[in-house]
Length: 105
Image 1 (cartoon, helix red, strand yellow):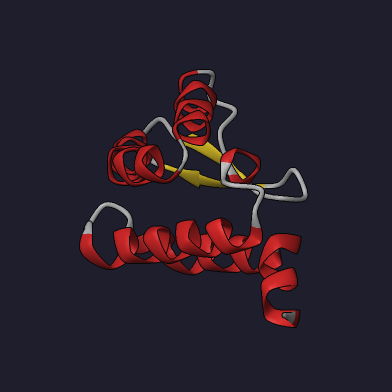
Image 2: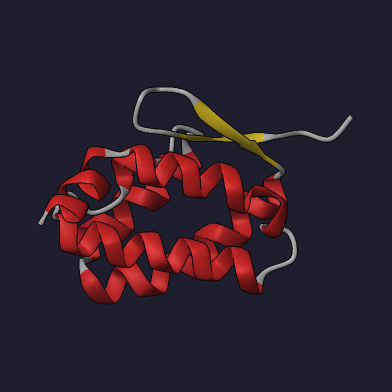
């Protein structure tokens, strides 16, 4: 049986992913988030290391959140280990109020 890691969604549900998929997502996001906001990148890494990471670790600013959303979808398109999780991650990201706020703007 393969170990899984949970990427927590806004409503405390989660997307269960393989450890390699989670690691690949962190490796893809961290340098991009670090450029945008160092504290957010560090928070994401801490959450990852504690196996509690997820949407709450993404930027609180809706515009920055949307950029992180696009990066996650890009990662799913580019990294084979993430492709099976694209739909679930997209659904979770779109359900977050920061996404909804951006849509209303």
